[in-house]
Amino acid sequence: MHFLSMDRPHLTSTFALLTLLTSLNAAGCGTTPTRVPPLSARVGQALDDGWSIDLSREGYEGWSVYAPEGPCVVVTARTTSAHAEATRPRRSFACYDPLSGEPRWSYEHPVSEGFTWERVLFTPERLIYVRPDLAFGVSLSSGKLIWELDDQIGREFQRSAALFDDLLILDLAHEVLVVLDANQGTWVRGVSLGGGQLQVVLPGPAGPLAVMTRVAELFEEGETHLLEGFNVLGPGGEQPAPPRAEPNPLWSVEISDGDHKLHVVGDTLVGFLGEGHLHVLDPSDGETLHDLDLEQKFRLVAGGVGKAPASAPATSTTPLTPTQILQNARRPDPPELGNLKNGRLELQGAPRWILTQGPRQGIAMTLVEVNAYDPRTLERRWRATLPWSATSRQQTRRSELDALFLANPQQAALLDAATGQVLWSDDLNAEDGPWLGIDTNGAALYTLHQEDTVVRLRARPLSHRAGDHP
Image 1 (cartoon, rainbow, N blue to C red):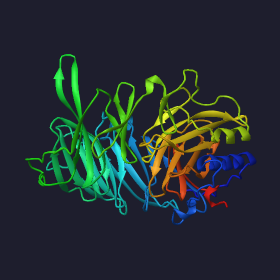
Image 2 (cartoon, rainbow, N blue to C red):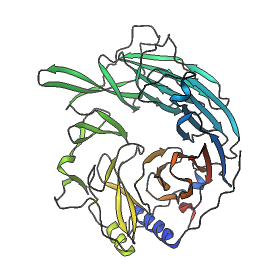
Image 3 (cartoon, rainbow, N blue to C red):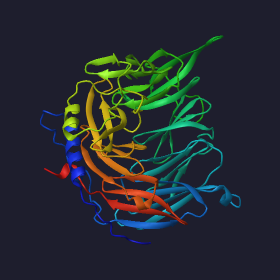
Image 4 (cartoon, rainbow, N blue to C red):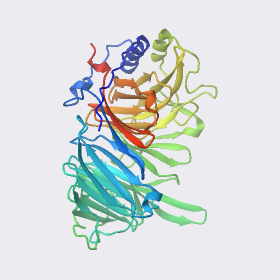
């Protein structure tokens, strides 16, 4: 194990200028900038000096790092196919102290090959691993296995999984919704979906509200789909054995045949429920708030939705001076929303807003512009401009920090979720090469890099805390 002292790069004048411009863009020019709590006020003990640990990568692949609230930075990997020929494949987990890098525990669990998805979830007490044929919980403090999905609960394949507070909600292949205590793995409730499939779980008036899709009618030319919302908790289904509780929908609406991928954004549901149509729904009654035909190149304008001129560019492609950046920050019509030229729609990672991000040119360098829209009004709430060479490929909402974490292979940043103000932004060490995994808990940035025969876990302090400056 090696402990390294991390150099803290200095702010260049260009970076300082762009940080100032970003704060002005986020707060809105011509108004008094909103004062937001600095990053240092949102975390406990911060990392003073960096550290790194070399981990043997022989026989392992699929590396990831997680920095949840609590006593661990968790590194996970799976055994390679060649390594698994002699033994059953395994998924490995290791916990390291977030501040010192000291190893605390490691745990390995046998797994099967050939499944398409897996999820690593966290409660304050547990690491939870879910895949189609398996689910188990491990203590974050000791690394011991606390529970595993067993025959009493059922070994049917899981189609999806959701974590709501301390409840683990599994959508099983035989159309049963299973609700477990995420910390103990004990049965809470079972609900028959009656041909439905879980889409999302979100806060409701009586606890978690589940939204599912199901086929209502079949026709020669197609089928009719329903979107239904129901309370996850309620009477019935308290025992693992049948009968299951019925979902008793609070509302049911007919939808077009789309990909049915919904996301919880603020207090709305957002997703593509028709060919090229982005729908914004009210989860209290399923009513459509907005129906955006993105194939028709709609864009957001103040107070509503209007069709963009055919010649309107999604983003500026000419170099901009600092004055022009400030002028553009005052323009009343935001850029287009959607998967358009030079732009990308983001529905994951920022539950409060609909986000778009795309490149633009300014001050002889590439910039990335992030726009946040209120899902109910479709009005732009903030815009942040980052001095980045590429848009982010990782986007995570850190609710405990009230911040949005963005990262691409060369840069990373934390933005205030409410205003878009940059709390921290920095270039990553180019000598490390592309990261295999990246995450932050607000106290430090944790990355995984491959170097020859090792994978290096590196922790670096978060410097350049823009919110700390007067």
